[in-house]
Image (cartoon, rainbow, N blue to C red; front, side, top):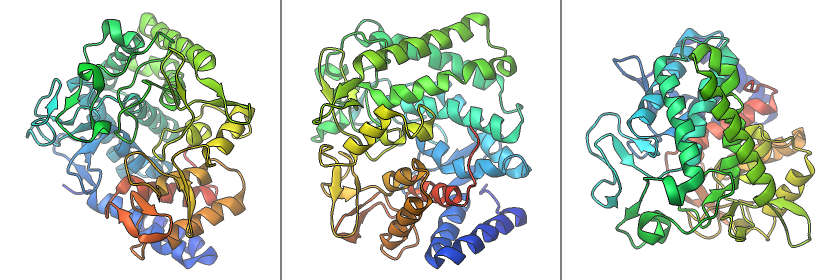
Length: 430
């Protein structure tokens, strides 16, 4: 059944809209549409008590997207029982999916066989919509379980399913530190679009050992060029730090707690040794991807986690010197996916066309600065480039916002909502 919109939630939404309207009426219009749209059209409470969150115009649930879609509601989880129950149901479903297959990024609501099974050569089953392995899918699930605990003060969502799923993630990340020697994962898709398949018989391009953990694909669902995806490893490092705090409520063993701590240390050491390179000006910056064999890429992608998002993820502060240099680099022409035009400048992605930037990345620019005027500038930019739809899209052309991709994309909508709440100093605790 669809998630009902409670009277309390409507009152909260109107309160925020009143604040936004006093600054820019368009902020209020877009916030109202986006905040309500996610509850009314993407969230479904199921008979088993779990929550299914459709990504938008694709009838499947992404572990990453679903976390981001509900994140702005976390600020209400302490006072609103229905919001807590909805997010707790999502945590349970996410970890249940991870127990079905931890290498999967997107799942069906039931085992109906929909998705990419006909064209993908990998270990599919009827629950799987798409089996592109991405580190961030698992990191987002841990993050949501932790953030719900922090923001609600409750632990009843930390169930046996979550415990088993978390242990499964730890084991997988340890396995993928030695992808070539230990991993069972292969992925080949019958396609002309090379970003959708892995080379070398589905194993991916060669890598050396770094201590980081391997990823097949980026958060864009496009394949990695070099398979140590630095921002996703940075995200993994952050959520591994949550394990010790959650351990007493999950009944984790000392061995499992130690495994998380060891993984965190090894991943962090790998980032520091292999993930820091020099930009064109000779400054130390974080690479986007490395392979442990001497290859690295200076770039960033509009999807999160990305290098732009590191303070938002909790990896570093916004004034960390390496982050500052990295941010300046990725928000410049040195990044091949940085586009600038008549309407906007920002990060695009290999997943969409040239000169198309992502509203998600614009929201992230605002969420990673402490300057209120800059947040306001970005909010103005976002509402002025929605093609009059009162919703955020996947991407739009820098010279013409009527040329956009994805009419209905809830992740992007909720990133806008999170930035607007942030402008009014309403933030998810972490």
